[in-house]
Length: 277
Image (cartoon, rainbow, N blue to C red; front, top):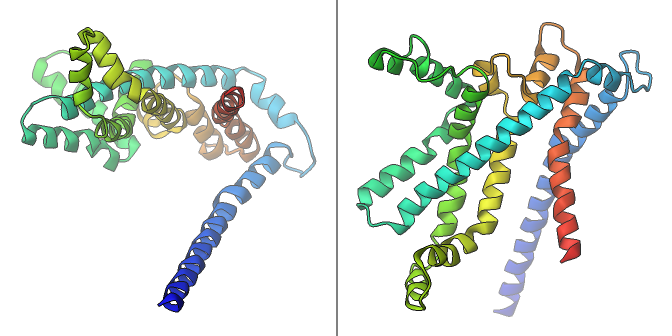
């Protein structure tokens, strides 16, 4: 019996090692090699000589700086709004007494946009809220001019809402409702009970939701490509530089490196926090 257990244990260890090597191979092919090529293109000219001229060309007219600030503003605002709306819906699904069929319907509708390509969101907004859109024709008036900042906020909210809702509702499923009752019995107010029993256990998930939504919006180019208008963002600038009428992979590599700054800053802050703790 012991020999059989040892045999199965050895087989399982081999399977785990094989899976590890497969993951390592994919990491090397799809992350490490593209990163090396990206760095090479950023620091070399068309002739192959090492130079910082690509950085000088990209930062010369201030387009990248402006696009970067635009991306941060629109991504952060949409992430905050999305997290708030996702929290409200997740709370409705997990902590209210609405009918079960309504909860299932809300869950399905909340995650449905995850199955649609991002550029489709822009076209859906155009066909719904445009000057000749369906809702505009029904009401007889256009709600808002969705090209630019407002349209990007709206599109990013639709795009990131499923992820934010999934994170929050999965965490809320592990929160015991009886904590709220206990807080009320201990004399806490409704607001304090809500914070102690619901908000406090979700603080980590709320932060993750904001960060995840921010990076999804920051790196997406499908929505800006359709409804971005003249409001330039980094992802759109990268797309136009790499795949525009005059492709420039060297300057595009510089822009791609700049897009890695927010994740690097976040990792640095996380490591600093862990060191202080």
